[in-house]
Image (cartoon, rainbow, N blue to C red; front, side):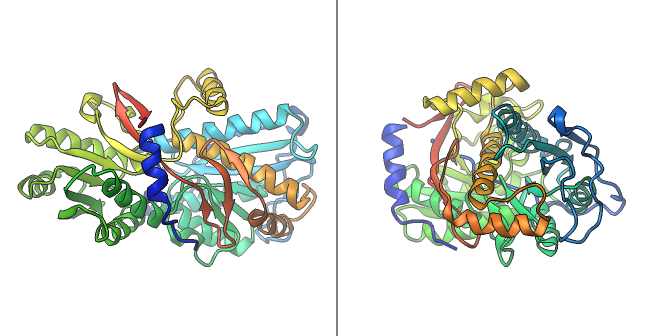
Length: 424
């Protein structure tokens, strides 16, 4: 794993004067015992390949997924229902937009793309079921999964099948550890933890910091661990570190009170937007108004139902994407996304959009074709990944280590007037 570059703090300082989240996230949700069937999915196909749905359902990596219609079959998985649906819907739409653009422009090396998205409800078992449903459909490569816990479960399956997997937003290092077929678009959890601590310290955002994190979640606990380690090198003090678990994530009064009593002027939240919205609401009711700082998991907090978004004013986070950026690629993407889906894209949408174009670049570099077996496509693409660079919405000149980690730099963002804005 290539370590977070020490120069990142200099980059982030520059970002404060020039231009600001969200690294990816995932929910390590516990499996439901009754989850026997994958959720119904959505499929986007080019008309010329619309009849290619009856591909082999053989589970063997050599024969599963060979396209009969001359199209690349890309599957995707994420939560489009449940507590993390903001993430999954964004991934579904971002990838869908990229597929439609590529198909309209002639496809990949002359081949069209078929796209099939499956809902996993942010549940590990259902995510594996969704993966198997996509295999039966004939999937040749996977954009997913969206969240880290589900991605770890699915990566074990895709590694066995030697199927190429590119997660847009799964950030745990366990996703790529030992799985040479899996690559990431977003920052790893350690990188987010180190980057957040460096940013807070380099820009003197706070002197006393409290942390509230989910000790039962690989995403949250992974970021927390590296944040604490790097904080020892920074000019601020961690005065309170309080955990919660998946079984107790509605009442945060104890954690908030300890942060308040310790005099923390900033609370670091390496957690997801649903829990963060509760913490902000409960802190307000307790008369506690510190600065709140998070990572990509907070991207989506403005869409929480019945949440008073005014409480999120001033919240800061690290992210590779900001919808208000002025570069032409971002403006074009935001306009197209709004027209297609009626919403402003978040980092997860941008990551998924980039993921499809990254796959396109790897396919073109490798010379893979739809007639190749799943395993052959995977071998070619994973060999190409360390050799390509991609200028995407979430990073310029993105590149990949052989272990699957992406190299790019984050930006700092603040919620201003109910919108995510780069810190100028």
